[in-house]
Length: 339
Image (cartoon, rainbow, N blue to C red):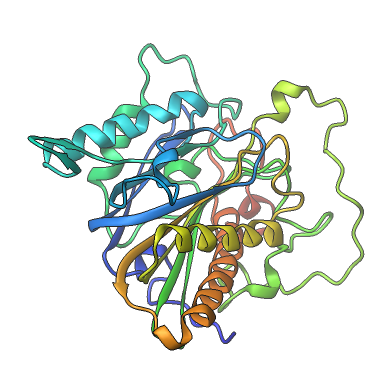
């Protein structure tokens, strides 16, 4: 597939979508919210062994709700699920949501990463994530910061800081696909003993350094610390969203998300482990119909594009992360960049 990134090379190249970030430098955590001009359709696929979610059951194809108001990606482990409460409250104040008689209920699925052991001060007296969720929603725009930002603020990988990544592709059919990801895996986005990314074969326009594909042999992955405790090993999870303007139903959006999981496998080694809660939401804004005579082929192309976008977004999130005070791991930029 000839890859052409969208104008921003962000998930917001899918028309109608916007993303907002909020973070706390003291806590080393944050929240990222995806929302849209009008309700969108979504499904979800979970492949990690330790997920943390809210309202994902309603996204199953056999269930009622087809209109989603926002999706929340947050740090904070179980505490971070409260970010969705802040977003839900703010949307309700603007009368956005699923209508049941005189009542309006915003539908806000959410997923979290574990970022509680990253050098930040976690001794809060009141859960901060509701406020961070509100702030992230208020900051929603078509442009947003990658790297150490939003839900990627406190993210880490096996050897480096993680971060918030995004990328897009415009297909020959005219449909747009975009990915948004919080990179916080048990595994590594870098080829061992190199500064090169596993995602290098899929890079577009030197978007994560143009370092090329690593040709050296590499050892079998082994945990950095063989004595790593079970508690520390659970400090992981990569969560993301793939979106398109193509008209999909919930079953098709599920397959779209399933295909995007390949992007994690291509860019993080190992991925989908017992210690990760890896999951991807699949989103359709339902704006551009698929050609009925080519529907299956176009759905395959959308899934392929989703995997490519996700792999690139992972590398961009790590490549653009920056060093901050009290970090427990270096950033790629601090080791290999020009800063």
